[in-house]
Image (cartoon, rainbow, N blue to C red; front, side, top):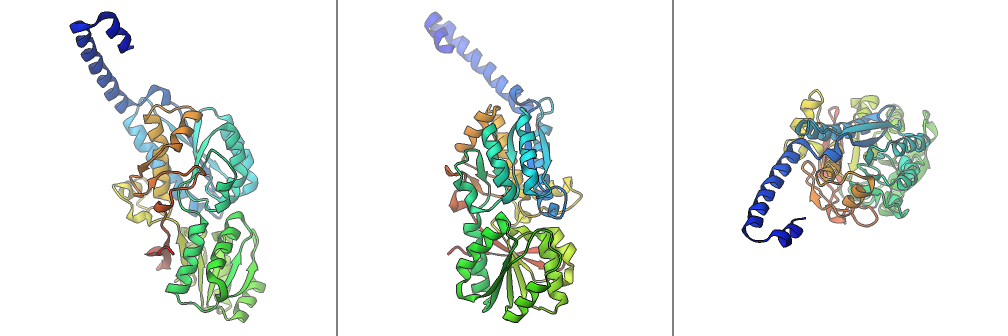
Length: 390
């Protein structure tokens, strides 16, 4: 428009007009920075994961982290707010299709944080793909999720191709274990993680077995573990079964150490198992400690959540919400524009310190992936060490 005016009027008059226009644009820009783009008003981000049920202890802090980012955004844009809409999957893959369809039908939803678990992600992503809703999971780690050709899929953490070998490395090189028994829950997440850990454990494995969803009696597997002489149990699965499994192992006088992935790294694993029985259990996570997050995230989170420390992935979810909010600030308010924005994103998250930059498959840049070991100690998950790569 300015170029047309220059050609029409020229000279000093145009100089004044350009200066005036620049001033007006600056005022508009300043106004937008305070009140938000009108196109973003009323838009929604979805949060998809187990917000109730046995695995809510792992997922609820993620939702709280995302909500914190939304609340902070809305505080700065009071006359142009956005909303976070929760979709409670209860961690059940068979609920995922209906929830994803509901999200797709709400035209105000232009992005999604989640799904949180791998099984529900496999079910939901084809529906999100058809709807064009860009999604970033803060915690679904099954490697095959990025091989389906979904353009909407993104992962905010490393996958089990990093976590599985890291867990094996920790068992071999830090714990110095000689006999390891491996059990998985046959879920998309648990089986995949166990398979990757097995590759690194090799000849240390003295036995394997399977558990199943909602299992409550582990006596047969416990007998196999005790007979094998294993001092370490690697469990690929979630808290609901792992907590009962470990309690029964202790009741059967097994004194070894359970090692699991991020699927057991939640408060319920400690509460349900009990401090005494869970003490010394190791959980890995392709994430740094949320309690060591950068900036004011930890204090802000605690202030919003009754003084509770942020659990794993809370800082990641906060950062992922801010990725979408950055899209709104850049004027990207349609599903298609938000999705395209994710494809070119390259910015460090204010809480995690991770640079969020995605490959064409939706995988996080491998240089940004770190895996940590956490230990159950005195009723808390305590960061123990970052596990070296390779």
